[in-house]
Length: 266
Length: 346
Ligand SMILES: Nc1ncnc2c1ncn2[C@@H]1O[C@H](COP(=O)(O)OP(=O)(O)OP(=O)(O)O)[C@@H](O)[C@H]1O
Ligand SMILES: [Mg+2]
Image 1 (tube, each protein chain N blue to C red):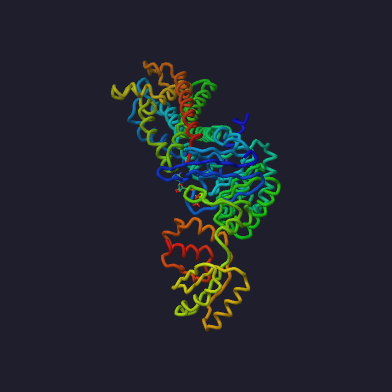
Image 2: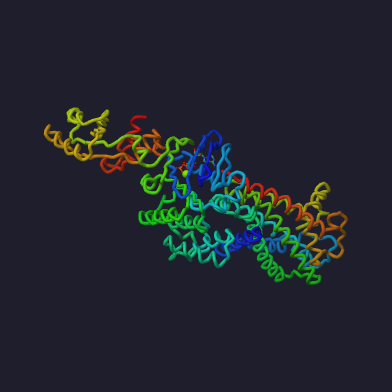
C-alpha cells in the first residue's frame, strides 16, 4: 500500500512542521476563542433564540456548535497556504520526481490539517466549558458530533488543497482560502436562527452545507433549544445531510485537486 | 539506441512566445556523463524538467533507462535521482528528517531510511548540522542536502541541474569526487553547469544548448579543436606601439590578428607552442616595444562556449557597459574577457 505509506509520511512531515512553527497553531486558536468570547459577551445579549429559555446562558449553548463548525472550516486556509508554499519552494517538484502514489502529497496535507483541527477543537472545548457551555446528551453522541466536525474540516481542507494548487503565491492562497468563508459561515444557522433572516435568504441558509453540520452537531451535543421547531428538510435530516455534503465535497474536490496536482506544470 | 540510458528526440516546449526547447535531441550512453552547457535561458532546466517527468513537452519523445518518459512517468521516477537548480528541501525539517522522508517515500523502512540518511549526511559533510532545521543552513549546505536527497536510492540515472552553483571550492571538489565515484559504479548522469571547468573534468560528452537548440556536441577536446588552436596574446604598454607590434607579430600569425586598441591587446593565432612565444618576446624586445603582458593561450571551453553561442548572455546584456569592466583586463577570467570582446563585436 504505497498510497497509505506515502500519505502517512507526508502527514508526518506536515505535523512535524506544525511543531516547529507553533505560532500557526496559536493564531489558529486565538481567532475562534475570540469569537466565542465576543459572541457570548458582546452580541449574545441582543440575540434571542426562538424556543430557548430565558436563561442568559441559552445563547451560549446555541452558539458553540456554530463556532466549532466555523473553526473547522478554517482548515481551508491552512491547506491552501501550505500547498501553495510547497509549490513555490520547489518541494512539490521534489515530490513529483519521486515514485510516490498520486495524491499522497495532498492526502498527507489534509490528514495533517485534521490533526491540527482536532487539537484546536480540544482547546476550544475547554474554553467553552469554562464559560459555561454544557452538552446534554450521551457521551458517544457528543463524540459523534466531534467526528462530524472533523469530517467537515477534512472536506474543507480538500477545497483548500485545490485553491493552493490554483493560485500563484502563498499570500494569495491564504486570502483566497478565507474570503468566501465569512459569507458561507454567516449565511447559516451558526450564529443566529435562520428564521430571523429575510425570507429569500432562508433557503440558501438552510441548504448551505455548513448549516447541516451545525444543526447535526447541535443535535448530537444536545444543544438544540428545546422549543425550536425545524421545518426545513435539511434541518430535519441534519446528520445524514451533513455526512452527505462532506462526502460529496471530498469526492469532488479530491478528484479535482489530484488531477490539478498531476498536471501541475511549469 | 537501446544502449542509451537517456535519449530524447525532437523535444519542443513553449511558454507563450518563448520556445524554451526547440527540437532538442540528446543521447547519453550508460555510465557516462553528458554536460549540458548553455547561456542563461538556453533551455537547460526545461530539458531536465521534461526528462524528469516534471514538465510535459509539446512534442517529441524521451526515454530514461529504456522507459518512455511520457507514457510511464511513474516507472521513470523510480529510476532517477534529481537535484534541481534550486534546492528543494523542507526548511522546517532537520537535515536528517529531510533525507529520511525521501527514503521513506522510496518505500524504505524507517530504519533503512534513517541509516541511509546518516550515511549521506556524512558524505556531504553535513553530519554536524544533521539535527538542525534546514532553515538555519547556509545556501551551500542546503544545496548539498538537496544533492544528498537525489542520491538516497542510488538511482541508475541522475539529473543534476547546476549542482555546484553556490558551493565553495572544497565542497565543489568533494562533489566532483562523489560524481566520479557514482559514474565509476555505472550511474548515468546528465549535468548542467555554467562552470566549463566542471564540464571539462566530469563530462564525457558535452552538448551546447542555445535558444532551445543543441548547437554543438562532442567531447571537450573535439569542441576545442573545432574553434582552432593556440594564440599569443600581447598587451603593449603604449598604444602608439600597436601598429608596430602587429607588424612584428605578422610572421608568426597563421590567421587574422585581433586588435583591441583601448585595452592595447593583440591576439594572433599561432602554432608551435612555447617556442613561438619565446621568439615573439625576443622580436618585440628587439624592436623596443614595451610589453605589459604576454601569454600563450590554448582554447578553453569558455572560448568554445562563447564562439558557439556567439552572443552575450542575458545577464551580461544589461550589465557592465565599458568593455574590460571595472576590473583590470589582466585580472579578468577568460570568460569575462571573451564575453567583453564578443559584445564589442555584436
Ligand atoms: N514556467 C515558465 N514559464 C514561462 N517561461 C518559462 C518557464 N520556464 C522557463 N521559461 C522560459 O524558458 C526559457 C528557458 O528557461 P530555462 O530555465 O530552461 O533556462 P536555463 O538554460 O536553465 O537557464 P539558466 O542557466 O538561467 O538556469 C527561458 O526563456 C525562460 O524564461
Ligand atoms: Mg536553469
